[in-house]
Image 1 (cartoon, rainbow, N blue to C red):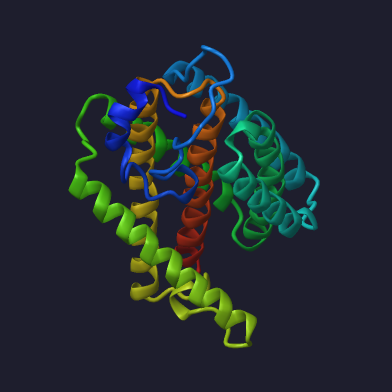
Image 2: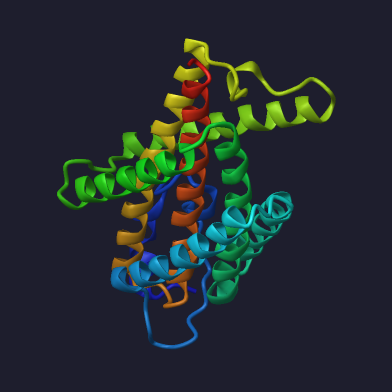
Length: 255
């Protein structure tokens, strides 16, 4: 249950993020185990820890070319995301595990991309980090504001992209192949334009996540929700990194 302060301010959390791992219902019906509450500094610290775990496991599978972990890592990561969404009290344990398995998956898929286009992984990492810190700075300096219309637009676009990806997934499952605009070897302007659009939407989800975390810290949700909020950021960053890889691959295929 929320505190009275949380109940009074819960309305501000509506439509905070289009990210399903950090949605408007993230902080509903949470349980207070003690008097400690979520803080922005605490969330930052847990995000740093989780990113270190993700990068360490990703580096291991990339360097040692353990591509067999790619599919397993994504599946286990997905299961952990679902479990954490239903049981946020588990987040201090499930989020580090998510970072571990997702890092393994990203390391494997990064190796495959790098085998096709050498140097693409370094470029994707630099661009992902650059977008993250640029948007964080813009948000902290209030150059970007998460207005209600902004949230609605990003949430709607994110939902549309998700539906499109699901359609493409089921098409490939039944022998139809992936949609042409999602094929990394498709270097047409329409395909590249689509990837640019997806990268922009993924980036804007970071702004919503920052805003969501700031508001949740003001409300004073339980301390363990710092890990839960970290999960939302990780999911967005993983999505952004993968979409940047896809975009760079399409650009490379034009050469």
